[in-house]
Amino acid sequence: MRPSALEAYVGAARDLVGNPSSLHWAGREARRALEDARESIAACIHADPGSIVFTSGGTESDNIAIQGVLHASAPGKIITSAIEHPAVLQPLSRWASREAREQGWQLVQVRPGSDGRVSAEDFISRIDDSTRLVCIMWANNETGVIQPVKEIVRHCRVTGVPVLVDAVQALGKLSLDCLTLDADFVALSAHKIGGPRGVGALVVRRGVKVRELAPGGGQERKRRSGTENVPGVVAFAAALREADFSSYASMRDAFERALEETIPDAVVFGREAERVANTSLFSIPGLDGETLLMQLDLAGFAVASGSACSSGKREPSHVLLAMGVKSGLARSAVRISFGPGNVRDDGLALVRELGRIRQRLRTMAGVVS
View 1: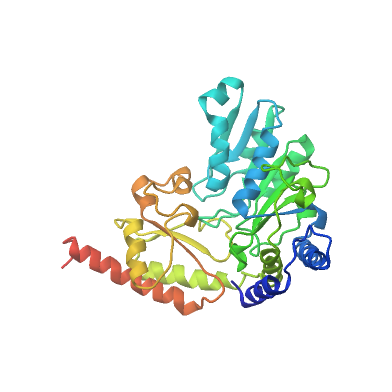
View 2: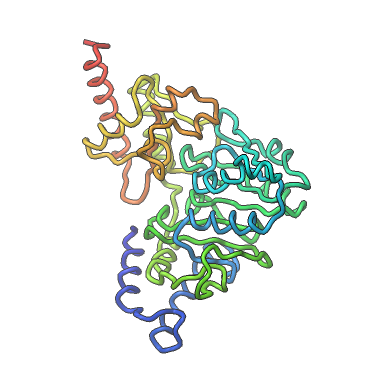
């Protein structure tokens, strides 16, 4: 957590002892802090404060939108990309089951080009009168490649098709203007910008109704029941006010240049497309990504193989496979994300360690003397 977010969290946890739904003084203080944070977040992302629904994170935000729309819809077509986060692909998978298909549901996954970017024209061409929901991420969580959400949302507004934009990886890295974007739903998460884990938001376009996943006390204007996490929300707002990852582009680029100089056959994915500033996904041919991750862990580096939310799985990245990358090379993929606390030398130290690990593993395998 950013120091400002941690300070805000501790202060709220210590001083705001009331339930924000209570009418007594302690509850009113908590409610005031909650609404101040809501207005602060809304100002940062250019949204109507009343459109913000606080959640436990991006996964819940995605699910509220997906489940809420589809359970209230007649069978039809769902269109998404093949590179979405599991928080989108997993809930959508039930509408691709045999039973769902027999009822008339159809799930269409649009593949990206080899650069990791989905074609807006290709995506839009799949949308028709039978489409019940469109889901598209703003920036990919593995490659960092920015997707053509504005063009897709613009088409959905004209055709009246509900659209969910997963902006979890875009928050703090790109300029978000939710009012101009005009998507039905925008999913956000606090911990991607130096806020606390377990806090997120769903921005709901004015006039769009949301079906609660877990009805209860009617909090968040009856869109997400449950006592709000006031310290987490206050810290989320504090982190967002300082979130600016633009400076990490030079750090990432220096890392990638050094990587190619040290290991010439290393492959950096999505480099041909526009990416968020802090993300790099690469493979070193012949080295297993999980093995490399463990070796780096022993050396003090915390990296991920593909999606951090799915680490521990042995399957190759579904994002890279959708881009046409061979399975063997996809299994070698390692993702790094620069953030607060990192300096340029961290990336260069990582490259030096990668070179040592590769040399050591090749020597153990008898490839070199």
